[in-house]
Image 1 (cartoon, one colour):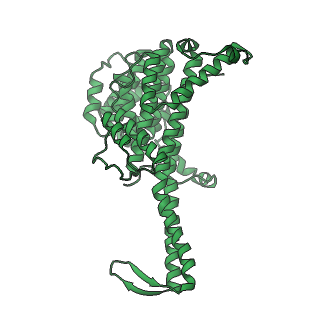
Image 2 (tube, one colour; image 1 turned 90 degrees about the vertical axis):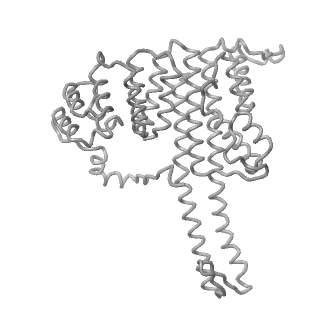
Image 3 (cartoon, one colour; image 1 turned 135 degrees about the vertical axis):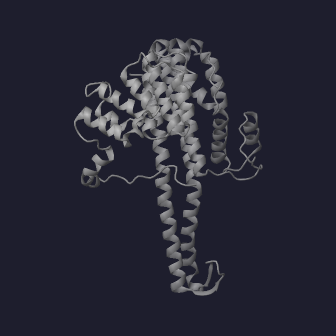
Length: 426
């Protein structure tokens, strides 16, 4: 069996993305259903009732015949049901987010223990002779111990899980982890949703206070917590960040000879975040790759992190931070690929065009890279870029969107789903 750490991280990220992008679609359908129910109820009242009052603000009161009361109640119930769904669905997605995280932690631990079996040597679990003879092999007995270790970890609170992992693997996981408080609050709020209908308890207040995670304003005990669209977005980002950072700290600690695969995994993951224009999340993970991770497989990988971090910070609105990061490194002896990236980020577009031409058609940056890489997001609209593109590839530049529009008929026939912004409006 292939125990791939990268595959588990990738699956976790994919599942979180699937949930995060699904919520606005589900909420949109709920909104449509609520409007349909409301319109149907209004139509029923107008057809079978008599309007007795209109308060000047659009609120109308109807009197209906007694024989229509039951039908009116059913139609009103449909409105109430869709309104309840609009409140409950975000909570359900928060619960699903945390459930995906829990499943991921279990899979991740299984990969670590299978790839490094001696980690089980520290297990204090005992097997009696009567239990041992029931196993057909030592491997089967070992698998039983492994499953019990995972089960024990997952039964603990999320705060206790971090302590268990730190003790078992002799590594600090919470030091410098700015999202720790938000993570504790999220997991405690999830517990309220599952066990207490979202009603604030003394335990929730105490746990959050002990971890510096109390929301502002501090909710009253007995009040009811919900999940706004902004809260759902923050929860997605917190779990994504915590899950990836946790995996990479343990990966590099337990398998120091596997740095190249670890670097490639993090580069691939953060690149996709840049393409998706999730600048803040990309910045947090790329900052982690430079400030927390001290060892990289080689200088090229480290410089890729630097360039992508500068892209994330600049596109996220902090050009000064991007330039400061670039200026901390000497780029004179680097390949033209890196020099092009630095020139673009510093908006020296004449120099960037020269590097495009120097790299040429068979260089390290392909035609598709110029269309897709977020590095060129602003550069693509300049005359220098378009001129350089023609000189290198012999054709006029066309964006991916322009190319796709020519295949629009095919895409429509294939039933492409409409784009929905998962962040939406507050």
